[in-house]
Image (tube, rainbow, N blue to C red; front, side, top):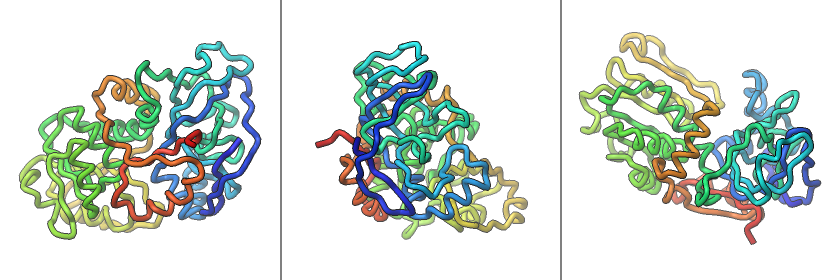
Length: 340
């Protein structure tokens, strides 16, 4: 089968052996798979990504320097049930799954050098973790389940009570997922801050009530959030942002850290102490939140109709990784391995 391999930032298409399903596993075709910011980090900062993953336990992150097939935000089509399955899924059926393979030890789909992720024509999934895509839901929309579940989990972790103003810093795919979940919950006003005009427009489409260019205006002084109970979602993950938030937010602000910073960062705790700020770090989602996100997409509660800005085949992945270094025109990009 054809697959995109990544090794220390180099990406190339190669013919590799198709995976064989083990006990309780299902062979599937990867129909659509999103390019995640974590994939970009893995390619651009492989050494620090691996080192940090190993130090933190590495359950769902890159822990090898060997070539890997990335891709963990996928919708797939059932091809064949493997040994020991209950054959709950029929060939041709669309499915999603949390990106894990229930082996011993557990394998992270999209970060393992033993099994391929979604940037390949075929994958294997654990039947016990697979979820059927509701009839009528296209593969492109279903492939957004994983990133939407990340945003949904972050919003759940914020423990919102409905009287907050919300500032989302960063309107890339993670920020857009958070905005989508906030909009579905009826929270607001929602202000999104991003230097990119294109991403600010995507934020408005996904439900932001106002957008701010930090190069021109201070997002923390927006009239939409002034004198309101404030919750900030940090969705960028670069050094310096947290300390900047500490300086600019009012007392008693809640800060939810969704962005993943790989570099060493610095904060001044005294500022947070004086303001009695609350800091919440979040990761991933629960399996229930993953299932609920797929259902919300299928039922239209999560409006993803405008979220996919570009699609590429396997041959276009390397070029797209390079293009995404300047994200002005991109919202969510999907890889379609069977695209001609």
